[in-house]
Image 1 (cartoon, rainbow, N blue to C red):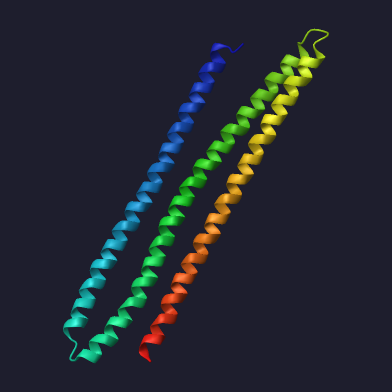
Image 2 (image 1 turned 120 degrees about the vertical axis):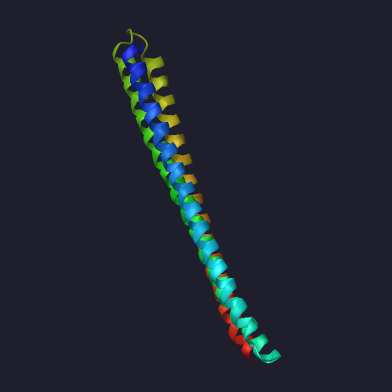
Length: 182
């Protein structure tokens, strides 16, 4: 049976966790806003520079050469922006994951303490029920750890695929640029 102090302590810990996660979520949003502001400023500056460059073109051939030279930086900036968005999202998600794992580990430890306390106070002849309860708790913990490992592996696979796609896109734009100059 839980005491009033235990309930108050648990609620206090839950509120602290909630505030901590809220702060992490706001930090992620703040990073996204900063990234979008920086990207907007860069786009505006690039548009101004490109407009001035286009206005200074003297013939069609120079315009075609200029057009192909403008695509490469745009593709690289788009890839860099996507990478930054991905890094912010995965960083924030990782913070939430760490908090969740810590809370889960603490909950598992409390559950195991409760099971051990129950086992010590179990009446004689209840060994089968105690063994069943211990087995169920162990199986649940193992299942949870397996799910955690699977989620981490899936996240690593997604990151690997994202990196491969970004590298291929950048390589494709780099390879396309010299091909246009021929």
